Amino acid sequence: MLRKTAEGVLKALGLHRPVQRVWRRFVFWRRGRRIRRAWESRRGPGLACNLCSASYENFAPNHPAPRDAGALARHHVISGYGENIHCPNCMSTARERLVVAMLGRIDLAGKSVLHLAPEPLILRFLRRSATVVTGDLEPADYRWVDRGIRRVDATDLDFPDESFDLVIANHILEHIPDDRSAMAEIHRVLKPRGQAILQVPFSTTIPASIEEPVTGDPDVRSAAFGQFDHVRIYRLDDYLSRLRDAGFDVEYVPDEALSDLHRFAIVTGEGFIRVVKGPTSAASSPPR
Image (cartoon, rainbow, N blue to C red; front, side, top):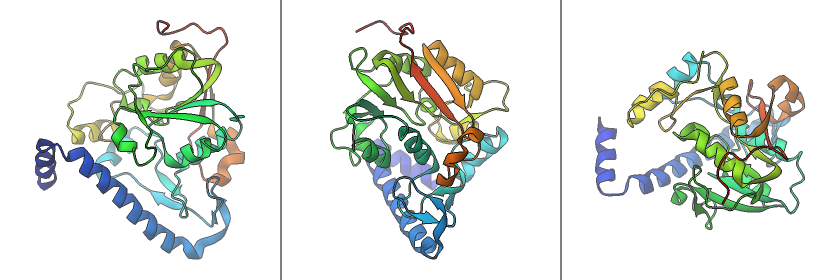
């Protein structure tokens, strides 16, 4: 009750998002400092971080908040939680390490990249060799990551056709009510044979994607989808079908086929979704 009252006051004053941004960064910094101290004695052979090169016997766990845990467990969602999630040195996450491992298989030299809701460690990796434009619907949330970030609506991208060699929207589409429009727009701005990294949480056990209309109440969304700002839980094969409907060539690489990456402590059960704009794939949005 106290939390909801405080949120209401901050929203009325127009301060909710700024305070939320500062608080989340502080909590993450404090947790990272605590983990680094606790794991110092565990440095050594075992798991390796492909972002900072540190090695530890094991990495730090990350488990969902109680209000999120029920939906994630009930629907068996592969969502980025579990053991060995955070590198104790740089605090990279398992899902970031998976993306960087797959980016390492792409020649990024001179490539143009659109990075939505940019993760700082992935952005730093990209900028070693590629030209990167960052964007988000709420750019102030990411100004600390990139001062030049643009306001970007994923369902209506303000870029010409075939602008980018690569688009990264990592764990974003589950936040967007009109995900099909976002997929179509990403397809439109990619060059032929361009690639997209569009990982999402998913389940293989639910009979269909769960996206019944719910209120904007964050507690209701947490109970339904496993996070306060999610609007669905994808069934994996449905998600792949939506990407194909948008015109992409799609291949799901299962976790067991990524055994060479397990040393980086990627999420158990999470495969990689290879998404490519085919050379002759039909445009899903009107040209601009």
